[in-house]
Amino acid sequence: MKLTFNKEKDLYRLISKEIERANSTRCPQVVSEIKVIEQIEPLDFYRAAGKIADGERFYWEQQVDQFALVGAGIAASTRTEGRSGYLAVRDMQSQLLRSATVCGSEGVTGTGPLIFGGFAFDSDKQSSKDWSLFGSGYFFLPEWLLTVYGQHCYLTRSVVCRPGDHAEAFIKKMKIQEHKLFSNLTEIKTESFIEKHNLLKYQTDQNKLEWNKLLNEAIHAIMSSELNKIVLARSRVLVYQDTLASESVLHALHEKQRGTCVFCLENGRSAFLGATPERLIKKSGSHIESACLAGSAARGDTNEEDRRLGEWLLHDSKNRIEHEYVVTTIRKALAEVCRQLSIPEQPLLMKNKYIQHLYTPVTGVCDERASIVQLVERLHPTPALGGLPRQNAISWIRGHEMLDRGFYGSPLGWCDGEGNGDFHVAIRSALIHKETAVLFAGCGVVRDSDPNQEFEETALKFSPMLRALSGR
Ligand SMILES: C=C(O[C@@H]1C=C(C(=O)O)C=C[C@H]1O)C(=O)O
Image (cartoon, rainbow, N blue to C red; front, side, top):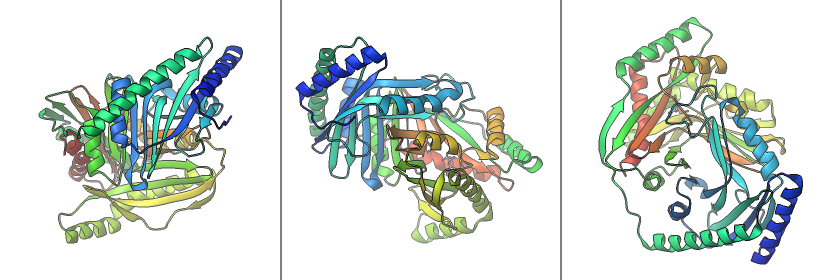
């Protein structure tokens, strides 16, 4: 239901009506109000929101598109175990979000009621202690949502009316929070951002001999079975002098990783954050966008060296094969649900600050009514993060890899009531908790892989998070 008024009195009436409806249907009803507001820096909003909703925020910024979403406070959430994740999120989208009553300046994608969150890489794997709060899927509908599109800013506030609720209580809470949020914002805007240079106490890396052994086992498995590719990851644990603050890490990522999607999902005292260059799928109406990203080389110190490394990557057969597995798989998965699909024959180079990749962009046209969550489920994991054939590779990873990936390498993003949204693959990421950060990096293993080179490649992939954590 769409309405076009937003006075407090009207909002009160609307919430009362939706509570009545919830009382009679016994189903929760979402009410969202969207306002056009003056321009706010997404990171300022994130910091200000920490004072009303610490541990209940998310951050999502694509600087290239001048687009950002920042959410705070939990109006409704879902946390799943095992394979129920996708279904639970689809239910939330089709039941809770689709039937929401929206008032104010509606009509802009990324405003109004939407949920943000992520899925575990492997829902069949038991979560370790580090990831236990996140489960196999964790999403929430924020009470406060800032949407930034270029020069335009919108604020959505959402409430979930449940049987027995009282409209006065909602309005009172909203007013108090709004007052706090905006007075914090004024304070924060006047303080300059204090860059925090976190001091490292110690670091623990996975043993290189064990890594080489694992890689050799994977290569052997590929040579002696129907497996073509297995993606393996390693982690690095860093312990700092003081508690890590997600805002200062996000600030460093925002400054240094401009071409990527900078994200953060808080969950109590933990935050999963990073700067990923890899989109899994974006859906807007019937239009979809995806990306094949696999095959990596370092950036050169000089333009000449950088160009040479790029040329080498474009022509290296091992990297081209790794990349081609991803293109073939994404093409097949999307062709089944798209009436039009456009994928160039040859890959391009994507150049990020420390690393360059083989990159093939994908666009297509699918059924407008399809939910992005179905598309995510269909695609994840692509051979860029899992392997080929998919199920065999996942089982191999589950049985051999010496870490819990949690949400690393998994789809993370947002979805609205119409099933539109955007999910990226959560790489170049870390899980922070108090003074500890766990960084993740992986690489595709094929029959010609060299364990030492793959070790170097994963070391390079730690760089964006390593720098951001130390405030650089
Ligand atoms: C697994 C990661 O990256 C993935 C693997 C790549 C590769 O093997 O060349 C390249 C880009 C990503 O799809 C990572 O960054 O941790």
